Structure formats: structure tokens, C-alpha cells
Image 1 (cartoon, chains in turn purple, blue):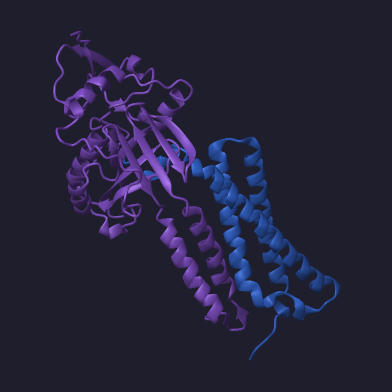
Image 2 (cartoon, chains in turn blue, brown; image 1 turned 180 degrees about the vertical axis):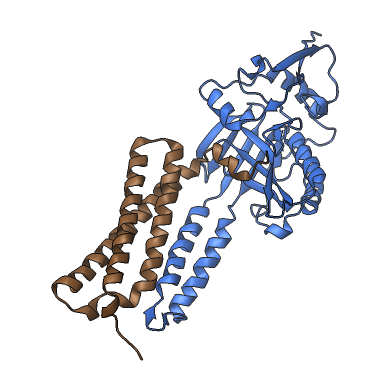
Amino acid sequence: MFRHPTLQVRAVNQTVQEAPGKSATVGRGRWQQTSRPVDDRLYQIQIPKGRITGLPTTSSGKPFQLWALGHLCTERHLAKRLKDNSFYPFTQQQPNVFVLEYYLDTLWKGTLLFVVCLLFVSFGFLSQVQNQETWGFPAYGVGVGLWLMISSLPRRRLVLNHTRGMYHFSIEGRTVCQGPMHLIYLRLALNSDAYGRCFFQLVLCGHKLEPLVLVQLSERYEQMEYLGRHIARKLNINYFDYLATSYRHVVRHWPLGTTFNPGVVLRKTGAYEKQGSQSDLDV
Amino acid sequence: MEETFSSRLLTVPAHSTASGVMLTVAAMMLFFIHLCVFANDVHHFCVTHHYDRMSFRYTVVLMFSQVISICWAAMGSLYAEMIDVKFLRCFSLTILMLNGAMFFNRLSLEFMALQYREENH
């Protein structure tokens, strides 16, 4: 059986610059997945035993699963969800196809604002304060709430298709964008407060996609990083650290042309090791 | 060295074009409403001298609305700057400047009409 050499990407004494915006402009007109021969290898090894679902689900059952409030959205909550569904927040339709259907959380926020302001306007609370007509404030709330509600009503659908190497984002059946797999990624983001305490967010984002926050405001970096890498490994997408330049990025898909970057050295080996070490730039 | 999440603005989401245009259009509609109210006030202040028909009872809501309109026009022009379409950039900047000018016009009129407000003791 012919054995073509696997490509193992390794950065030698250089940090890998993560620039999703730049790779978008590089790959825009002529995208091509450079890691395709390796992906075939990955495909052969990646299917865990007994995990292939013979029944393709047409729609995932929980479109509201991303609606948790900030303080409920901890990494423990995410770990528990991952135990139930190992491809959270996606569901596995076929061995290499992941589907996520969701509503934006501005749906409930807009509805709440609309209902509360409508009650204010209709019952006449605060309609006049010291001879000034102030019913205009709840009227604004009604307008803004209605707009938020209407813009969030269509259901969003994100499909990761590894057999074709593309992701596909559609709103209520209408395709918004689709692109190559290197343009969608999982990212750890940093927010710090005035005292210097760092809070991390785990976000699934991509080119022309709405960012989806999986975990909000956690202080535990190692656990967040572990969860992020685990999810990215399960979904086979890139994972990026909160710093732009870091040794802790895990890049599985490269845009066309970056493997010719002088800072990136390709090392061809005859054997293929465990799937986790593939292009793992952890130091 | 620390990077906040504002770096996600590097990738422009697909819905931001539509929301930028919506914000600018909303600011434009609010501008026309404020223009009509301003014209009405100036007419009653300078021409007919019916000071009780001016919009004194709605001053708080009007100022709030003008500030919100400026904010929406600024957000819309920020989205337009990101997507680099020349017509949208010019349009949103024009709306932003018109809203700013309307705000200062309203401020000047309220200052001049201060002594004509109804007094309650």
C-alpha cells in the first residue's frame, strides 16, 4: 500500500502569528485546503469506535442552548455539557459533518424590553414627570425591543463539513456565507478589569460569522485552555490563544500559501503519531 | 501585550453591513423628525410668537432622542468605514454631521427660549 509522507508542521524558534483577518484576505479568491492529504489520514484514524451514528438528525434538538446568562456560563457548566454531547455545541450528523442550529440571545432580551416598555406605555407609568412628557422613553424601548426581536427571530444554522473542507452559515435556509475551514476557529479572549484581574472568554468565531460565546468570564486559564483545545480537537478546527503571538496556538488548517512562509518548517516523517500532536505548537 | 476582545472587529461579520445600514437609516429618520420639530419651534418662536405652542413639554425626550440619534449615526458610520463601500461611507458621515448640527441648533434654541418657559411657583 502506497504510503505518502505525512506533513507535520513545526515552528522552529519562531512564534506563529495568528491573524485570522490576514488569512482571510490571503485565501479569499483561491482557497484550497493544504492539509488535505493529512486530513485523509486523520479521517482514517479519527473515527472512534462505536461513535458513528447511523441515524442522521435533520435538526439538532436544542436551539436555545447558547442562551445561558453570564454567571451561569462557567467552565464547569461547559464540561458537564461536553459529557452529554462530546461535540458541544454542535451535533454530529455524519462522521465529518457537524451542525449547529441556534437563536441569538438578543431574542429574549429584545422580547423582554419590548414587553416591559409596552406595559409602561399602555398603563401610563412615568408618562409625565413634573410637567414634562416622558412617555417617549418607553416608546423608544418599544421600538428598539421590536427591532431586536424581529432581527433575531430567524434561526441560524452553522454547518462544518470536513469532507468538503468548508463551513456553511445560513439564516432560515438562506445562505449567508461559506468558506474554507481555516477561517473558523475557537479562541480564548481576554478581558481585564481595573485591578488587573484577567477574565477569559471562550468564543467560536470566524470570517463573516457571528461570534458565539461558549464560556463567559472565567478566571481559570488552564481549565479554559483545556476545554478549548478539547472542543477544537473534537470539531477539528483551529484553536487560538488570547495573545496574538503565542506558542499555544493549535493550527490544524492553514490557508493557501502560508506553508511557504520561511518561519514555518515542514517536516516529513514516515510514521504518523497520535492525532493530537499533529501541528501542535505547544511548548 | 494583552489583547482584549476588540480584536474580533478584524473579521467583519456578515450581519454588520445590514445593521450598519439600518442604524444609519434609523438616524436619518430621527433627523427628519427632529428637523420638523425644530422648524415648528422656530416658526412659533420667531414668526407667530405663540410661545405656548413650542415643544417645551417634550424637551427631555427630545434631547435624549437627539443624543441617541447621534450615537446610532456614529455606530452606522463605524460599520460603513469597516466595509469600505464609498457610497455608504459618505452617506453615513453626512447623516452623522447633520445630526450633530441639529443637536447644536436645538441646544441654541433652548438657550434662547429659556425665559419663555412656563413658570410654576
